[in-house]
Length: 68
Image (cartoon, rainbow, N blue to C red; front, side, top):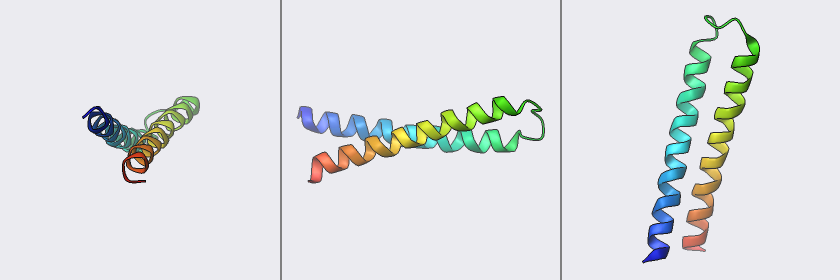
């Protein structure tokens, strides 16, 4: 039972991280014309890409742990 809860928690966190990461990159890309400071855009993209990577890793770990 605890294994199932851990699997669903990691899967949910991974999916939410992917959604927020891709949504954030989309918002950052859509505001490039309005934000003149390139360092803000740079760090936003880095942070959202890290969210996407963390989401992918957590989904991969949960699925690999469950079905391997």
